[in-house]
Structures are given as C-alpha cells and as structure tokens.
Image 1 (cartoon, helix red, strand yellow):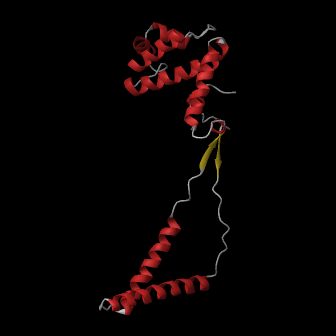
Image 2 (cartoon, rainbow, N blue to C red):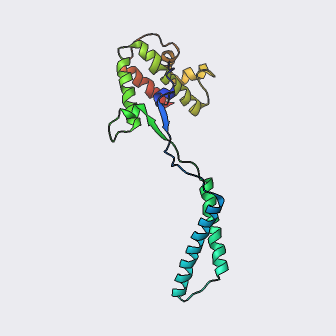
Image 3 (cartoon, rainbow, N blue to C red):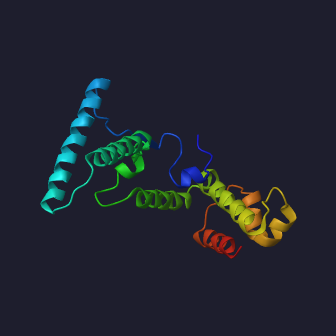
Length: 193
C-alpha cells in the first residue's frame, strides 16, 4: 500500500525500478608468471619502437632510462585499472517500459500523474489517498526550505503562510471531490511561499 509520498510522485517506490547489472565478461585469472611475462613483452616492444623512432630522427636515449619510464607507465596504468569504479548499473523502469521509442521515463511518470489527477476528479478517495499526501509533503518541504518550519513544527506560522483554504485542505481533507481550480490555487499558494 502506498502512502502517496514523493517517491510515488517520481516513480521510485519499491518495486518500480530494478537495476540491470552490466554483463560482466568472463575473466579467468592468469598466473603471476604469465602476467609478468606479458607486461615485459609489452614494455620490450614499446622500447624497440621508441628507440627505432628516435634513431630515425638522429636522437638517442639511455635504454635503462627508457625501460624504467615504460615500466613506471605500465605500473601506473595497472594501478588506475585496479582502483577504477565499477560501471554504474542502468535503471530500467516498468513505467518507462510502456513508453514508446524516444520517450523517457520522466514523460511516462508525468502522463501517469495526469491520469491520476484526471481520475481524482471523480474519485474523492483517490484524491485523498494519492494526491493530497503528495501536496502535503511538497508543502512541508517548501515551508522547510523557505521558512525553516513545517506544518507540524509551527502550525500557527504555517497557517499564516499557507492561508486558510490550503491549510484546511491539507489538515482536514474530508471526502470531497477534487476541483482543478482548487488544486491550481493550492499550487499557486505553494509557489508563492
């Protein structure tokens, strides 16, 4: 059963999203000897190419210095690959799955809320269960951010800021049908906070 919070508004309620783990390639651990020999071959080939290139230009470099630089570079590359973060999992939404190609999950969530609001016109219980708690949570968050209070911490000041209509709609919801102009008035009041 949903409490109609912000998680429902943005579609992050439990069970709405599942993570899709990236396919991990099957890797077999190589032995230490094979790893060392492979790195030595890479460093040797790189040294041969660099020395040949420098000789073509008429330049020279100490082979010991070049091998030390290439070994340090290879160790640095290995260290960076070891501490690299794992790839981020992709979120796959059931809400977004009904969206057509080129349509994102946000658009699908907005459409879902439009349907909820349309149905709330004729179903006061749906309004009380889904729409009103979200409006209350958004109102408390707006009051907290702008004035440092919530409806519970300072009801007198919150009532002054919200006005009697919005205050009574949030504190005594009743079972009356939703009117679009009332919600629009409530949202305008919340935006002015």
